[in-house]
Amino acid sequence: MSDVRRVFLLAHTGREEARAVAREFCAGLLDHGLVVRMSPTELDEIALADDRVEAMEPGPEALQDCELAVVIGGDGTILRAAELTRGTDTPLLGVNLGHVGFLAEAESDDLEVTLAAVVHRRYTYEERLTVDVAVYQDKELVAATWALNEASVEKGTPERMLEVIVEVDGRPLSRWGCDGVVCATPTGSTAYNFSAGGPIVWPDVEAMLLVPLSAHALFARPLVVGPSSVLAIEVLANNEGSGVLWADGRRTVALAPGARIEVRRGQHPVRLARLHEAPFTDRLVAKFDLPVAGWRGAGERRMRQRREVLDA
Figure: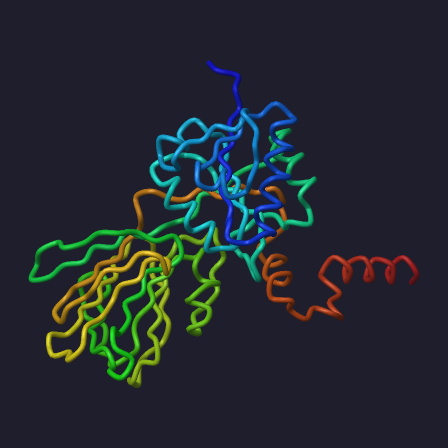
């Protein structure tokens, strides 16, 4: 068994900050004896001249023997990395340079701590549920894709609503004239789903979410279903315009009237590396800057009650 430790490094090289962080992180890994592998294009763009860096086009083959993929950028860059690592067991470690960055585990101003965690293997990983998406036209499979955050069916023309029927586990639920429908994972519950008014679901909950977008209907509430359920959205044949399927906001499939979209639990989860054991509640508070001033907590109440008993 080889003792060589490899890390694949991906970065949002369109930003100077990301290029600078990538250079610093790459140099730190090399100085500690790890092998760094990068896309030839990104290697040129960050302008790091070091023969110890392996240039290899990203994909399952390039990631297969890497213990970790370090992703420097925002959630969009991490979603791109999830595409590239699909089919491997390589965990993703996100270093956030975006705004909220829910998928990222580390911040760029903690680079030394993050580097030390990678070098000394002080990280774990958790598996995140994905969804597989199939598109049918006249009962024929015409496209298949997947998503880590969400699959959304949306109207293709701004001036027209999309007429759809939503189905859960083979039974019709409701018919909506709407801007679209979002089918999200717990990981994606803080992304498009959140913006559309859907619930936030803790990432260790195995479930799928369905959220209508601006639906003209009396019953148009967000739904949470079990992981074995199958969600289906039928684009009614009487639609005058077309629709479009978006997967993680990155991959698209054109939807003609009569199209049927089926969403089910994905066969391949995504592994996200973890450096901290902080509860998801703390992440929500930090990322959304939620007001928690004045919180006393159950632990403090118990201590106060104990002091009162001892003083009595």
